[in-house]
Every structure is written in structure tokens, then in C-alpha cells.
Image (cartoon, rainbow, N blue to C red; front, side):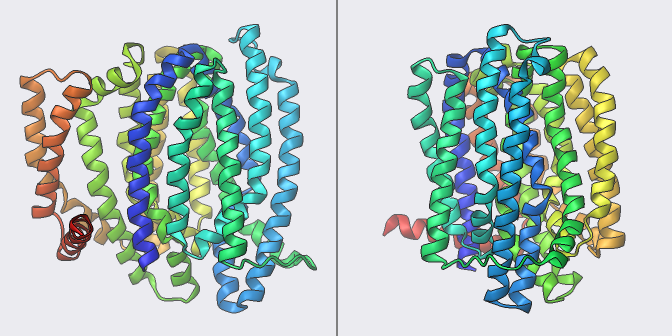
Length: 505
């Protein structure tokens, strides 16, 4: 429980730290790179990230098979699972090197239509470095998965925070030396190796992780394959939904439009991090509840409790961004990136529903009932591509974002909520009843926000802070007073007591 609490708090701490550093560092990076080269980096990174699909969903399967082996076979079973996953990912890493090498050799044929010859050569270097990074990350992911399964969240989050701080410290000198987008990739590789080595040492020395390489259990491998296939399908869908827009824009509009969309997408990533920071901490607990057969009632209560916390946090950010997002984007990225504001809004609003329900993904996987979601998301992704291409040609980045938003509203907002209630065993009436009880508490801060922006023009960071500080204070006060139940209030009071107690000591 202490590890879980520390994991949640440090997750939010890391998210806040990462956002604060990025707000300071990203504008400098954008100006040192220039819009064209940043667009090139966004394009290549999004394209090569497709190689992550070669995990075939097995990374997400680790938690389920670890939990089952731990309950049924103990340490021997866990050691065997570790050996199987490490062997499989080692082979996948080698395969990704081969496929990546083919892509690097054909970079001219892929991007030459909209890129200059110099940009094509830079893209070749970036792709080669990113391919090596992804190939190495496959086998090393077993160690980070083992740390999560053992619920060692304190170590994990501290390493992530150190990596967050190191990123701009190492990156800026290289950018100042003129290495450009190549520096971004080089630092990414350095920090990945740094994290992987720390995870390996922690697993071996602290957790005494055992890895058994013996007779391959082909029956278990077939079961893993059956379980992972639909996770793999869902990974393809997610990759399409979040990468297809930059690829489409890169092909039909060039690097400038891709760069603007990339800024809007980065804001969307910050928003998603607020939700995923807490949900990942509960993945081992969900798998244990299902493995022990402890019932749907407990899952529904956990699902709702976490969803309420996520909803309160996300709506603070979303409503605040609606009011002062445009001056923030102008101050952060520059006037040429002002078009990222409507793109970001188009992505943030519909993604809020799945973000407050992302614990449901782990519940589906723990129950081995994730197949339906993958099928639904497949049709969502196909619809997204079909819609985004003509909309992108007509309206640029905003059109592509609209296609993604529409697919999320239909799939996540309607179909998946029906499936959670009728098949997974989650009481969605109970969930939404508890979520909607929070909404009336938003009325005072929203009215204050409308009045403030109608009376005053907020510009630059100073203007954003002038609005955000009193708005956040009123929002938190109203949510605490009118929306939180007694358990949530106790959690807040306990956190405040601990922070103030340590401060005064």
C-alpha cells in the first residue's frame, strides 16, 4: 500500500515536473530547431514508432501471465515466464532491426515527394538511430515489467523523474552545437540505455529476479499468442489513431503543417499523462483480483474511485485550457504555432471519456475479454483514416484531428461503455452516477472564467498565470466542498498533513 501511494504521488509529481520542464525547454528547442526540422523529427519519429507494433501485444500480456504463475506455481513459475518473455523479445528485437534496416534503405522512396534532398538524408540518419533504440528496448522491457509486477513504484517513478530532469540538461548543449534533430534522437537513446541499465541492476540486485531458460513451453506460448493477438490488433489501431495524422500531413502538406499538429499532439500527450500516471499503479492489483476470483463489485468500486479522481484532475486542466489555451500556445511555441490550439482542443475533449475509464482496459485484459474492444477499435481506425484524408486535404491539421475525434466519440463514448456494462461486469450506471455528481461543482469556476476572459485579455505566460492561479484555487475549493465524498476528503487532508508536517520538521 505504501508503494502504491508513493507511486501515485510520484506519478503526479513526475507529470508536473515533466510538464514544467517541457514548458520551459520546448520553446527553446523549437527555436533552435526551426519549424521545418522539428516537423521532420515529428514525422520520422511517428513513422518509426510503428516498429513498436512488433511486440505483437506480448508486453501487455506479461502482467496477466506473471500474476497467474505467481498464484499457481510460485517463484519457479515466475522465473520460467521471465525466461520465455526475454527470449521472445530478443528475437523480436532482431526482427525489428531487419525490418528497420529495410525502411532506412528505402527512406528516399517513402518521403521524397514532400522533403528536400537534405531533409531526406537527415531522415535517414534519424531513422537508423531510432531503429536501434527500439530494437534494444524490446528485451529490456522485461525488467521494467517485472518491477511493475512487483509493485516497486517508488523506484520506477524516481528513475523516470531523473530521466525527465536529465533530458534538457543533456539536450540543450547538443542543440546549441548545431546537431539539430539528430541531437534529440541521440539523447533519447542515451536516456533509454541509462534507464534500462538501472532497471536491470535493480531487478538482479534488489528484487533477486530469476530468469529460467529451459524447455520452451509451446502450449503456454500458444496461449500467450491467443491472448496477445487482440492486444496487438489494438496496438495497430492506437498507432493508426495517433500516428496517421502526422503521416498524412507529412505526405500532403509538408513539414510545417506536421510541426503545428505535433505541438497540438504534444499538449494532448501531457493531458493523457495525467490519467495514465495513476492507472498504471493499479494494474497488478486488478490482475490479482481477477486471478483470485474476488468479484466484479470490487472491480466496479475501484474503477469508479480511480475514475472520479481522474475526472476531477482532467476537468481542471481541460476547462482552464479552454479559457487560456490560445495565449498559452502562442507564448509557448510562438505565433506560428497558434493553429495548434484548436487541434489540441479537438483531441482533448473526446479523449476525456476513455481517460477516466482507462482502468477498464486492464480489467478487460485481466479477464481475457479484450477481443471485442480490439474489433471495435479496428473499425474506428479504418474510419479515422477514411475521414482524415479528405478532411486533412481540405482543412489541414484541424481536419485530421476532427477525424480522430469523431472515431473516439463513437468508439469510446458509446460502444465501449455499453460493453463494459453488459459483458465485462462493470456497473456503468453506478460509474456515471458518481461521475456526474462532480459536474455541478464546476459551475462557480466556469462562470468566473467566462467573466474573466470577457473583461480582460490574457496574453503571455504572465497573463496565463494571472488567470490560472485564482481559477485553480476556486476550482479545487468547489470540488472539495461540493463534489468529494468523505474518503476523498480524508485522502486530501492526509496528504496535506504529511506535506505540511514534513515541511515544518
